[in-house]
Image (cartoon, rainbow, N blue to C red; front, side, top):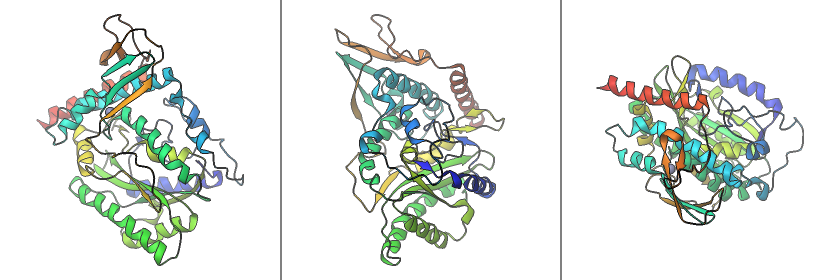
Length: 392
Ligand SMILES: [Zn+2]
């Protein structure tokens, strides 16, 4: 989806202002490589669906203000860069390489989620190839960037046919003031509990039609060491979107109106943005360099949302796409770049950032992490190690 251009400067200004009181820190979404630094979907949908993703700022010439809003067809929406097997595998290798780095600190914690973290280390660690198809076991965890790629595609396939019928979709962000770690668990529940109640009031009292998809997201501010749980929604029409913000302000009177956001969107960029990630797993450290939040911070966030739905539809029923929490194991089959005459087992080798056939020494994806990616993963591992030393 593409936000109306005329809206962007004011929105960006408000976002900057609101950060002072409700700052999410200078965080970058790695799960959503095409997102803008603000995390808002300010950019071109079709480019996102077909362009390369790594670390690039997408072009902003997607639309012109006043141009008719054209909703893509479902067929167009479901196009994915991963339809090319080689590209898809390289993206998967990149996701796995980065996820390995993130897991290095999490698996060392004495956490009730440690078995779930261990399952992510095993995610797609072996890919069996029979002829043209690769089969592997996937962990399904919400912090796994490999599985999030699969999940994004599934969610979009399930929800887009309905959302493409909405005449004036709006992207809504609802926030509350940042909270300290002990308050995160209950705050998240308060946000989620409020939404269906407000939706009911909008339908019954305001008499408005409301269909929406909502996503729960949590970010962390390294400067204030606080959490920022918030909701993103795509709402079917402007009147309902405005009513939602109005009622949100009544429900959470301590929140700041400037930290709430409503913007028109057309196309698919915002939808893709919505489905991409649960939390921004890469932040800027105190020295301005990119790294991951400390493992204990991530663990607190993941524990706070365990068992809760990241995504929820309202006013319509979408096909089942499976739970987005733990205990989900996907047996996925994907096309291989090169067919093989014999059955081949490809094993993930972290240091090579690729799957290897130990029989022939061949590498599956051909992915080579650029120097910036290697530096990021090394930094994440080092910081996780240092955080563990401090905690001792
Ligand atoms: Zn996984």
